[in-house]
Image (cartoon, rainbow, N blue to C red; front, top):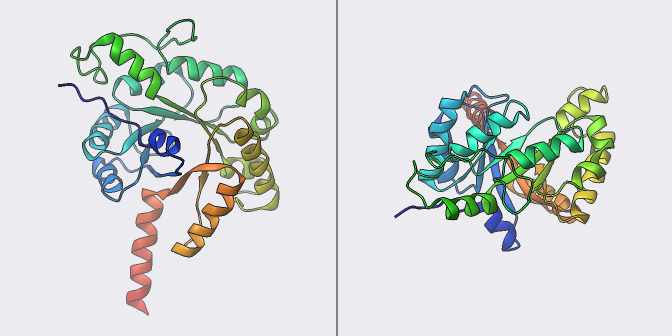
Length: 266
């Protein structure tokens, strides 16, 4: 019997809950398994900044499916061909960087969905992909399930992108938007000052615009300690954020080892 994976982020949001996940940048299926074992809803397999090629991404998607965490892939850019390949490999969505114009957003949404009833989808149709279980799944049923399940998250990370936010957010088929605070800070000549007032103000504006349209906003939680993390989540939740990154594997591993080392030295 064919098992069609569920999308834990969609399930959480539909139930009125927030969703939590992390970036995976290490070329490691075990990192994906650990994230799933910890109870996260999703992982973003980072092919842009991580040490991950397409073949490795397939193994990491397989690990996500085995542990039950939702696999999303961050491609190198918004090239439709790569988006189609990772979805054919079993990813349940893409997290696409450097979206600046509405036309780019429309192209990404189109590439992620099969063309049905004039929906504008241009995803290449092939029944022998891994996502369709190698020509074993019922094709019409799989195609509908894939269109209903796939997530398209867009990263806006430049001043021009934020200026074009109204037009970008008006594109049908966007499932979430991410304010790219680090790149935005560089464009503002603030060089990594993610919490600077100007960066925060821009992110709040984008969050409010997206929330008004019913588009979930993804926010990275950078506080340390349970109470501070919960407080930061509550603040952004009040503004309309519904999905939360709790850190990437590189950062979390470094912080854990550093804290252990500092404890040993003290």
